Image 1 (cartoon, one colour):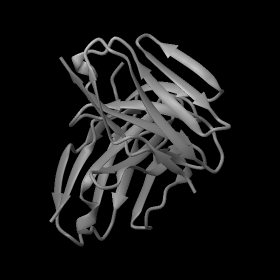
Image 2 (cartoon, chains in turn blue, orange):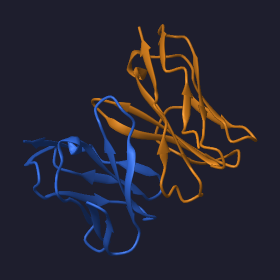
Image 3 (spheres, one colour):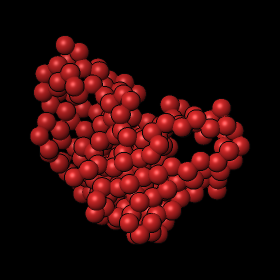
Image 4 (cartoon, helix red, strand yellow):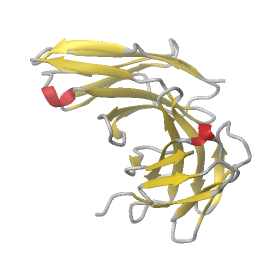
Length: 107
Length: 113
């Protein structure tokens, strides 16, 4: 089976850096994805990792360690608009989403 | 380029009825996936179609079915609706078969009474 864990909630200050962790157990592995979802809206794609290491995309970076079943999403220079839920998803046998981490960015 | 569109956006049905939801992917995208999102269970994978073939299916009962047409548009059907089927149903399209970079539609909010 597949199981994904993420912290339920996190709080950070505008301008700071925050790291959202994701651990997973999966049957097969075809990639790990991060999505952002604002309340009442559909998820939007942020990043994709299939090999170990860091993928950087502007203020967002995502890291993957397949041997440890671990990933993190790093958000730099936090802005108020970054307040949202961040979903970790693994594509193994099927596409499985984690429960999401609700991030609140405070002024 | 137009995004993923879903119709209808909101729907109210009665327990025991059936419902059909529609999804039009981004032009050129051949993969369409369906998800159910509820506050309690989060986002759960229903099934994925690529070039009119169902490639993957999640752990949902047979009351949930889908299909994809030659123009990549997809429909999802739920028969014998139950109260627990009330959810946001999201469709996502991808240009490639490995689901890299899925783009989600706005969803259909289904309420079963």
